[in-house]
Amino acid sequence: MAVSTLQRIGTPGRPWGEAEIAEWRSRQPRRRSYEADVLQRVEALRSNFDVEQYGELDYAPDRYPLFALRSRDWRDELSCVLVTGGVHGYETSGVHGALRFAERHAPDYAGRVNLLIAPCVSPWGYERIHRWNPLALDPNRSFRENSPAPESAALMNLVEPLRDRFLLHIDLHETTDTDESEFRPSLAARDGKEFVPGEIPDGFYLVDDSEAPQPGFQQAIIEAVAKVTHIAPADARGEIIGSPVVAPGVIRYPLQELGLCAGITGAPYRTTTEVYPDSPRATPEQCNAAQVAAVRAAIDFALEDRAADAK
Image 1: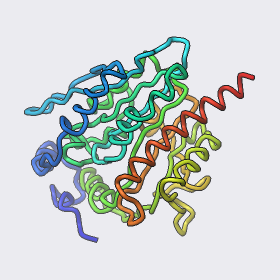
Image 2 (image 1 turned 60 degrees about the horizontal axis):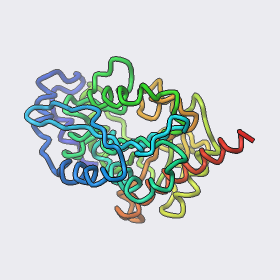
Image 3 (image 1 turned 60 degrees about the vertical axis):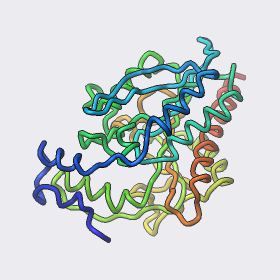
Image 4 (image 1 turned 90 degrees about the vertical axis):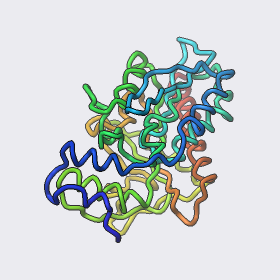
């Protein structure tokens, strides 16, 4: 495996300081457009949603407005569903899957749930196809009180007034080959630690909440996605990315303890999707479709399960 060029920043075994972070940031060119890929599609959805600006990131010389899509027929008596994408900006299908769901399928749930969709939480990372923000922070480890990541803080502020009204939160992610070749080595270098190689799973999987697992909910999503793309098998140790597989394509993390996005609400149903776009068995179209299938299956299961409990 080639050594990440980012591992060569700074002194091995010593955590990065401001100089090293500045050097790393200087190596991150803009590679695609948040304006063209996200904001223009959000603007086109104004006829179907209330579009809300919930923050703005000031990363001089760039500024990034943050937008969420809110159901136009919002009704206080209905439960709320939160869909988030692009918490890691490089995870392309999370962003485009959230937007595709809003464009093609949100009307199916009108009058049934209130939808709140934040399609691109980390636009600086989206443009640079990177996991971190420009402070060399991972937004998906920063969803905690007094968050150091402005992206995470802005989303938490948006969600907080509705925190206990959410029925469901689905956070759309990818696991890519660059996790192993670039981002995990970079993390080790940033923190002054030795990089220990791991293994990238070939296929889609989910991360459930170990503190409040919902196995039936997770399995319903896996079954829906399996019709679109393949599900990641366990490795030789019975694990996916170092965590025991508890059901086909499902692992568990303590979401709130780790500061993960999927833990920011009190929703009884919550999950993180992980699409694998680098598989020779998957196309970008399949990855986007898998994210949409996951969102639809999650909402359908939550509504049906809640209705069954009410009988």
